[in-house]
Image (cartoon, rainbow, N blue to C red; front, side, top):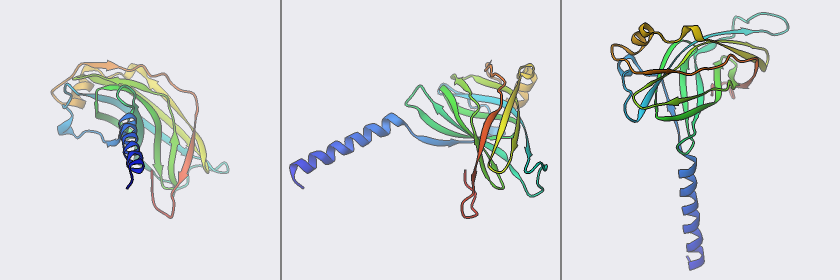
Length: 206
């Protein structure tokens, strides 16, 4: 290898390293189990919330098909915007309470996915929140209503601010150990479009 080629190779490797550091990494995050729900520390906080999800399936004016099924979980793609724009995928229940342990930082949701027997439905409901060390951040209760057809549809979110995490709810969710809780004020949304990404070759994908 001559000197010019060696310099070019070194420069390319350096640029790739800088790009990797700049754009951060991607990881998957799942809700905590009951035994892990107290693990807020100096570098992590807990995200709390409740989802209640309903879906209707309309085609040619007909109601939901008996062979149309959807998952009891959904996924959020979130981006941490304060430290290199790290991307995370969070798995949440479509119905019920959730607790997720996240690194300290400011986050925004970039995509939501709902898996069904026909594929994955994608949408975006604008949402931003902050995770503080040794603290809990509550998104409150969201009523999610979605209607879909062949490949498109809509979703609407209603936020029930009167159902914030009370002292008893906090204790029931986190166990005996509590943490200071701040409430994120989410606004109810109008209709947002959803689109279907169909399974390829009969295999499920997100």
